[in-house]
Length: 358
Image 1 (spheres, rainbow, N blue to C red):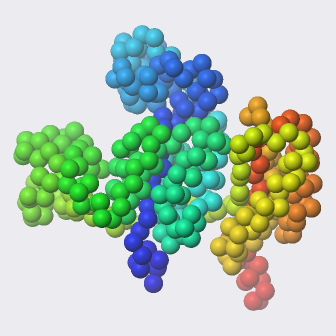
Image 2: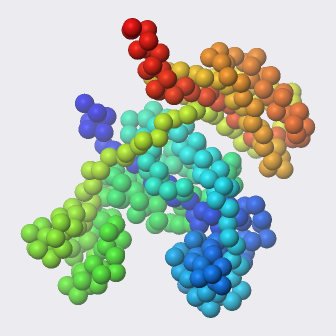
Image 3: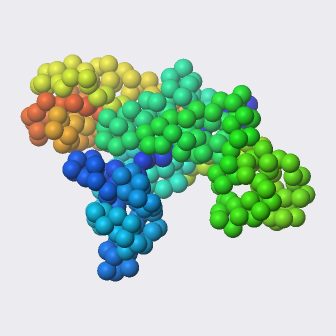
């Protein structure tokens, strides 16, 4: 029987705060305190993709016409953005998620569900995992994420928005009932302007109000969506976290409270980090094989470099060699070290197994 059928699900919904704008503010700190938006030119009938929180105070939001946004805030700085840079930041964040679970459902570049049911990491605490993920993203990627922890996807997604920006909201199973009762119906996924207006006309503002109606009444008013309203107003959501992504690597990263001044101090960190890496790999070693070793150094000035070498034997000596090569590229104090294994694709392992059978 599947783990999710025998244990209470532990779902984390992670959502980057104003993602595109956050990456731009990370790279140019002068943008942090001014109204900033990523979007198309007003002369070309462009629209806003996202904006930072100073801009949101003027009522600016995603999908708004850039021309209208500039009317609301003439001082708004609009930049076109850089999708390649955002993809790189997203990949770095997803790689952090993969250190905690294989069951990840990306919804976009900046948003994903994680199922950590049954994990032994952080004592099996989804809350502690979410806290560590948020801190690692802040330390290594340089932006903030908000997270919601709950027994299902519906509540986890709402929770991640509850304390934005840079927030964490945990709804435990025994808190679910009281949380849902006071939840505004407009927070329910799928309730847009039309449905919200119809519910308001019926005198329904919260999920507690919605529960006064039977499923038959809701189906009569809203068709198939009526059944969904009935379930969600009771906090019921049995959708699993679905993943089609194949893990490509396993890694461990440490950001140090004080920068490491030289290569010798970097090499001293490797034995402990490699023990942690091997411990994480044990959870997957019966299904995956190592394809090579990789090391990442992030210097004190936030520049970084990566070195890797293919092979199934990834010894301490290999990582020491890669670390020296990486350090030579910068020869500066180091704030972060990452060590990892590249993994062979599952289909290549299956092909080898079939060949052996033949």
